[in-house]
Length: 363
Image (cartoon, rainbow, N blue to C red; front, side):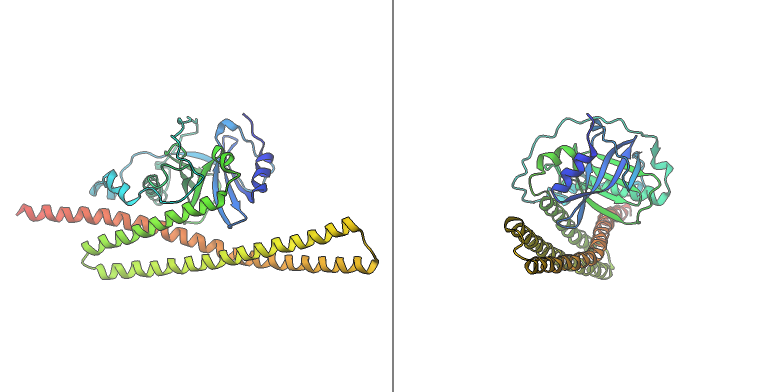
């Protein structure tokens, strides 16, 4: 069932979205990074191979290869038991978000895709291998948050993209010949069917609500994990100082993000008002015609002033985005890495505590 990339781009553009980067597998586009003009954030759009979407003559097209994630145990896994599934679900409970137009449907039957599965974790560097296993574990915990909604989650790390699929499974791809920053970036993920179903609704607001819900949950978990560490470590004061320092840094990021989002929203409103004023002037000229050369020159002068104002607004918007986007990236990375570190530490220390109890019973 071939799909036209031009029609898809036009549909996205009509709703305030821009197709930013294309990711292909076996010559078919399966992922598109989509940028929202309304809130200056991005999401990942998944295109099933059955749509046979071909992308050519576009910038930022990258080839992907499927990553086979096996069940290798890391060093920590050999010494500390994995937490019980119920315990993990208690930490990463379903997001309490209000999507009034989101109905909970039964999961659709799994669509089997045939992808290249030659690449495995063993082919990667130890650093990448360990981080990918961490990300997979992290997403498996996040799965509890989004199990009953159509929006899912993805994490971008270096040149790897890992996602919770619409069928609540995990996928991982390596992007060939592509260098990305050594940070973790959180994306909302949805498939093409969900996009078409919800395109007339406020998708941007839904995504912001879900992302804020994930952040809120991770922040709550940070406090829970910090409490566990405080109870089990003798050097709890130092650990709390680290956590407090990072929490304050995160709060400063949030304050900056909110401030710049409000500025961006205000500028967009001003921009709309100016466009409307220009349209009114041109409509009046079209309806009544020019009554005189002087009046025509005056209209042109007013329109020219408005266009200068638009140019200034665009310049300011660019300056805001130059600060807002890196700040969001930092916030994503700090929040995700903090969650990973504290979760692992909580599990490890709990296991160590139990081992000390066993040791005391030996004598």
